[in-house]
Image (cartoon, rainbow, N blue to C red):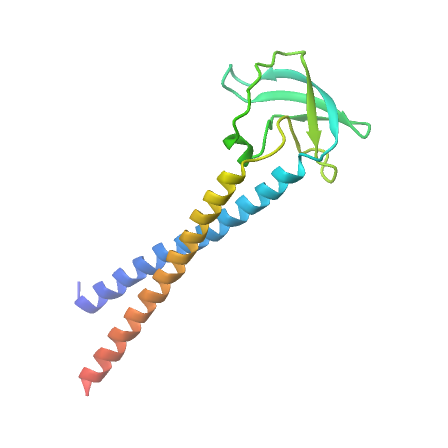
Length: 160
């Protein structure tokens, strides 16, 4: 493989890796911010009575429950938001037929949780990690493009 082609392929790989890092950082950051907003909001959501239906596929599987809100019945398996998993809450051992309190999103009645809230510490840490991924991703793209430009200009000046 000619050295020029090898350099171009190496730079292409570097650009792809850093671009992917930046895009992943933006996507994760957006997810974390959205989930945190929902975690904070669900503490004020209206509560509805629900009934545990079953666990899907054994004890470690998600809990399946049904609830009624605004005259319609909904079935769900979500017990908390993503950031809610980082909170230290007692996990109840629900049995089929048992009553539960379900917190229902007033804008989307099919979205509900059993444990409202989310961890602020996890939000800060995950936001910082997402920001770092964006920072290093964009920085890496700029660095790789500047190296490409320097090599291109250096090769052009040596040609004359």
